[in-house]
Length: 280
Image (cartoon, rainbow, N blue to C red; front, side, top):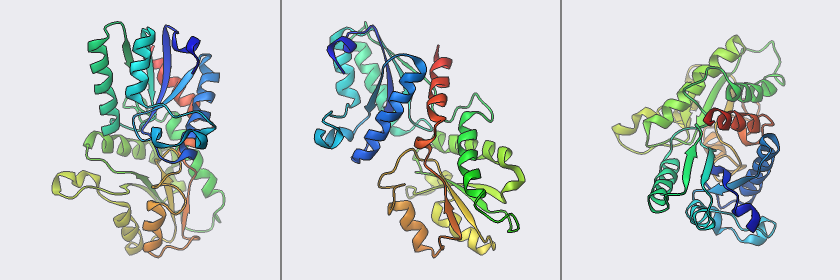
């Protein structure tokens, strides 16, 4: 980000959780560039945390930006407004933390206003762009399966969250996806990669582990794992937590098929643009 850009009156931010995986940051930058091309103004990729631990040499010589330092720089340079497109499916802990940081900066720097677009799963739309992204990813897998076989069950898996509002958004996405796919699949089961212990977090059920066990017990012959994840990392990447969970339950590659990650969809910039347009 050059000095001239920093002194613009308004900035657009693509805000993600952050990662220590350089590939995730580089993929995020490509997404920010694609969004910039759609809206006709610069877009800064900023992470809530973690990404600043990656050496700059692993990021094409450009250090990752993190939210607290970015806000401080914008306030110092006189930027009046930051519009944020969150790369979050729901109001997660990291997004809540980011909003609190922004509110604290606004209290100190009265000239700086932060405006927030909706999450990727919106309560205000029906079968919109995200449903089309998810169904498109699943249809790509379905097209590789012999139509003579029984329809597969889809497991829509997210990380899992201590906040029920996040899980409600995931379940909302699952219901919309079921309406779009119809009889092409046996059903949609929303599940969590992991969850915290205690009854208070039972809203995360079923976990991916229990969803796989349930499918096996119910005689389901084939499962499609639909990722509610953006980019590869220690959870959704090759050999990551989700792969290990699947392998530990004995599902063969021909029985358990996986979709592409959402972050690589060519329609994701369109979705983010729609969120910014709705922001006004």
